[in-house]
Length: 384
Ligand code: HEC
Ligand code: HEC
Image (tube, rainbow, N blue to C red):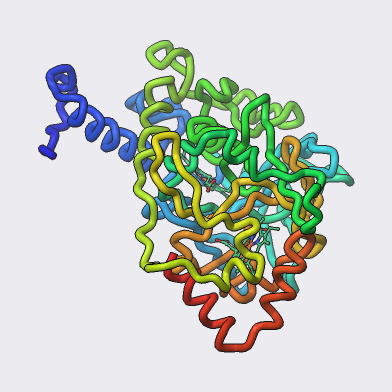
């Protein structure tokens, strides 16, 4: 393939292949772009905040990968791609702080607070807008790696629905429920709340960066009516961009970039029967196919499972309960330093030990294996 000169004037004259390469590069540039607060010298880069967690997508997904957690000596927890989700058992966010604690704000506005980790419990300090509601619960979410998600988007909905067994009719102890969000199958994020990469990108622009887009047209991101200064803060909606901060074309380019990020390279030469025998494959489906027949070895069924009390955080998101999580794909695991939705596990074995609920039997089977077999299974996961 030829290299494309990034010259807008040439776009019309390029072949379709060249145009898609250019779209990928433009999408990547938007993914990497650090946004600034309005009004900036160029409207094309402003609109950040007023409240935000990070200035760019790449800040939380370094090299389009998973985030990292750091804990300071005073217990303050931060890092890259780590956010505190707010919510409740009935699905609402906090009346004041919304659905996520924004730990940053543009000049002249107040960040919402700081998060500390102490003996395995979160503590929020410096809450800038008064108390949180009594019933608000909070829990960490670590950013996920983004490679190969375009293939997951291309798996026919029927094929995923066929794996679901919400009432456990086959009696194997594993139900698996499709997360329908506004009539579409949810596929992305830890609770499969986003049906498409475009919607997930729009959610991220709003909650993480504080920017409006065709998905969330509100330019104040996660500010609530109890944060009037934030609602009155500066914004970057402009006529040039459909009265938005991120217009249709920009959002489409970011989604296109995500769609084209290649899947992690697998080193596995053949399937390991032990993986299925133990019961891991009942959720971590070894292979699915895209509409065009391409094999996808993500090791996920993209369904929600009740993973038991140990992983539950009581936060309902859309129709997923506080105990339900989407089966996390296992491809690319060799690069993972922190496992599970809040990054609590530092090894594959630790991650398995947190499995409960529908996965209790598989975990017990794993625990009963000899050390050699445990290692074989772990090596296999590291090869995916
Ligand atoms: C402040 C950190 C942060 C920023 C900034 C951020 N993300 Fe994320 N991203 C996360 C976290 C945390 C999750 C998991 C969210 C969840 O499950 O609720 C996530 C999940 C995702 C997913 C779903 C991955 C999967 O496996 O299903 C995609 C896609 C994604 N982000 C894309 C983006 C894009 C595009 C941007 C920029 C517009 C962005 N993110 C900005 C933290 C961030
Ligand atoms: C009932 C379904 C189910 C079964 C059975 C199951 N898992 Fe999981 N697995 C999940 C879900 C859901 C998650 C995400 C949980 C979370 O993040 O809180 C997960 C997460 C993981 C993770 C962490 C992935 C990451 O990138 O953070 C690993 C590793 C893992 N499983 C391995 C296994 C192995 C090995 C087995 C067999 C012993 C197994 N799982 C059996 C549903 C299952």
